[in-house]
Length: 349
Image 1 (cartoon, helix red, strand yellow):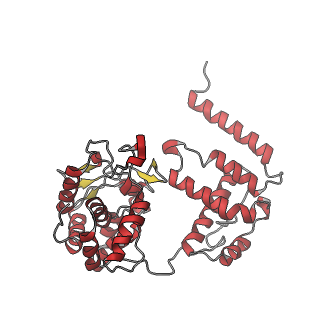
Image 2 (tube, rainbow, N blue to C red):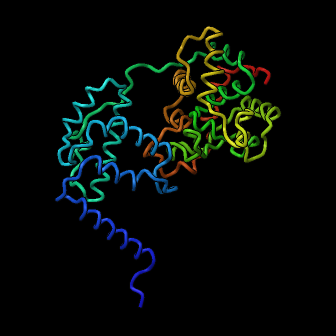
Image 3 (cartoon, rainbow, N blue to C red):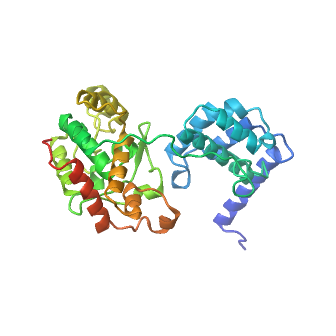
């Protein structure tokens, strides 16, 4: 008679492994932060497919652990870390609030891992009740740069075809840099005028998007569709599985046409010099275009819900229906107003 099915056997084996680990590094042991970090990396910061953390999240966590957490805390026992000490340490760092918030978030993940594996009974970062843990604001200390419609038109008119299409896409759809680089032609529906964001590129590694909310379909203004079709007529890589912006440099060797362009380099060597040449002195980056879309939507008086969905910000209220979310008339109208403001007439590609 079979008492357990395969799933039950796997769960039992996992519990036994966890118990063995707890016996080795449990509450009675003096577990150091560096030992906890090593265990966290072995079990959390590995590629577990859809069940694990995205590549971008794993990369960020490893960077924070190496640069900030280990140099300061590696010799501490996990029972010695106190919320007020971490909070004072974060205040002493000459970093942006957003960076400090990422450090706090990584520490919180680390201690949650310790509790899950029964290495610790408390998380000093979150605290036992709301407000009792480490307090660290993520609010911006300065307003991010945005381009005015006049500045954008000056820049767009001076760029070469590839860069022109890139910035028009980034501004009209609010795409993050990794999402823009990882676009394939099959993601674009020219009949329905929609674009699906299905993947993201970080350090030239293709993976999942930043959040589940990032994967909802986006409306595409007809002028942007026309611009993309013109670019497709010029591109050497037009099959459904080809990247919309595939690398075409001879230096790429065998990777030519098989990988996306490196957008950080495109910004540094092509877009920023052109911006300076046309008199734009703002510190320009890919996220400036996303901020420009958000600012324009707010300026046009669009509803918060429409703005949130166009920018694909995560929210617990819409978690259950993000995949079924249709492209609404309101979102298409709101986006078209921004496109008309920034790109009233298409320049030749």
